[in-house]
Length: 203
Image (cartoon, rainbow, N blue to C red; front, side, top):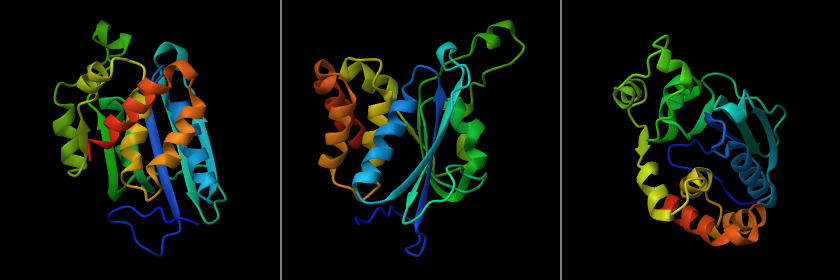
């Protein structure tokens, strides 16, 4: 079995808890499928759960992925996530309470303002980054907006984030790419490989 340690992780902790959050249409469910398959092929026990809340309408989507020697539950308790990948900026702040104090948090800088904000009932704060840094100082805000333009496809945030994740887990890059290539249509392999590589370049 390969090691999947990442910086700051205790050697005697056998399971890793990864939380993915964002909104519908960002490919979170595919990302969780890909990483789960990568972990299985690396020899780990894997459990995952998904919440699709209005996924087709821009509603919140989350996925819990847990892997290690033996995993009994797919759910991550509040305060127990080792890693969070947020595909949308505000969602990182909304879900921060799930993280351990020393957890790794990477979030997209993409802001997807929900329609309800247009009515003035709910306000999307301008200082989201500042608020996030106050509660989780080591949070990394990634310029996903610019990267999507460079890659030339607005639908590959999920694969960019997989690239980011791959840099902190000791599983070979090619093992990730093998699963990514199997998970996307043949005509989209090249752009997804480009997106994955761009994600790795963030760290």
